[in-house]
Length: 390
Image (tube, rainbow, N blue to C red; front, top):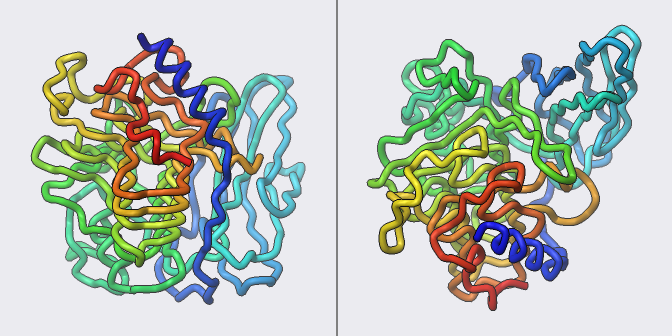
């Protein structure tokens, strides 16, 4: 059956080529808030690349710079660095420098390190964002300081970061990045990842935010046109008593981005776009663990409308418009924008007068490589309510 689902995905990807015209909030000077100053090495195959600053401040139109290191450990390999935006210079001493102008909208810069023997790694940083909150614990703690996002222990959890974003009420997207140490109690050695398990529902996201799991050291985006070599390090795992994982709620959250996360095991919706426009859901494993190849719930023990407590992958409802689930087709980092959405009630559900939304370039109903069928509950309905897709 899974080959039939792959054919359906390909058909939808071909049909849905219309690009949205997102309106992003105007750029404002970022506030002086805690931000990630340095990221550790991240490895995919034989290549390494690091960045010094995960967010570079500056006014729109200003020229700014960033730097980092690179390495290739394969004997005889030739590594080449490129950037998705701006210009990167590959120095012979294992460092690189980047320069470019700050755009008027929040923009990621991806540094690619690729060699001629299939080694590949990426690191990304952001331009045009506001406050930066760096999650450094998997604990499910509330914010004791809503300005910094710190909990009573001085750490920043995913919950406390979301609360701080909502408190700021800024029209400029905030960035939630990750820098969790391997000594964390919920470090998963089998998958070399970190599991965040909320005990109660997370706060609805009511202000624009970029939640970027690829900022976690060791994470890397997919660079393959076919297959998937992404390395995800942040898993958000729910349970049967929690209906929704992450919810972008209302017009205040317009222009948000969720990327680089493995989100699974929530009974209703893994990611919900509720009356939120111009959002992007990209580069995630949805319904799957951090490997992208396994469901954390037992399959195929389906029950009516529920797969052992795991609900819809991505839900777009209540008139949400101009949202992109997957690639926007602009030719920039398209493979890295691919979601893998499987082992859910429905892969993607479009309902409630939602319109002008794009679902494209994803693997739906398969494993991360697109070669094994994992399915979703509704056979032949990997994307539900297709009539509302445009």
